[in-house]
Image (cartoon, rainbow, N blue to C red):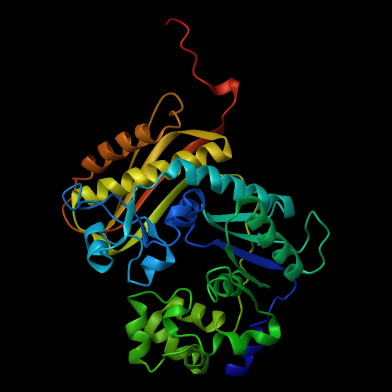
Length: 371
């Protein structure tokens, strides 16, 4: 049976896939635009000393991260870890504009671009616009172009599928470049701590350790039945991925049915103020995404998941297209959150999405003829 299973796991090595991840994106934009920040620990959050201790960290530069600061952490906790850090209120409008510039560069090389967030994307460059035959050469060229034009660094992973390209981009940050070919799979995956394997989250990692699975090599040596027994369907995915198998395609040029973002928080959001702060950040990201795609919509959807993994959604559909404005999105999201009952227990996930999309054109703009 094991032999048959191994035969069925065929590596598709025909694609050339790149994953690009901008380094500490928001903080890097601030440091680029404000050189005086370069030698400082920089935290993007409202200063908790000025607002009664409220707020959460959007991101931090690498100097602050060395102190233990990370995104979604409360600003007060970040202050305790890095008391000398400089707190800067995030400017999501600027970050959205820079993100659009980064993605414009991506599309010079291929239209097979799958955005993951404002600061990262997968690209399938098997066939590309500039005629590169080597994904490595193309990725180096693109990384240099981003730096030359935008003065921002990125970390890049190159492989033949999304799983390996994503892991490769995380391997040597910041300003890293890692290639994983078919011959480097074991050398690359075997020594990785099990928590670094995509899909092994905070709930799964302790269970892996209990089974004696501490590194990629241990996962590779685990038999399929054991993984299925302890992790269900995800166990088979672990079995496949640790062998470098991932048949998911880069989803470029697809029709967008919705645009939005959702974020998982660790630690959880433990107050109403923290929830509302993050809803406003999601509203700003939604505005930037819609404007970049030149889309608008009629239905806004909020999604929450609490500490007990209870997931709920609420939506509001307007007669006319909703104005692409973060404040308007936030007001609607706040009302929907109240419809869900408001803050009752810690929140582990928030999402804000627009559906009912259409291009922003003169044909579908509301006309107030009688004003």
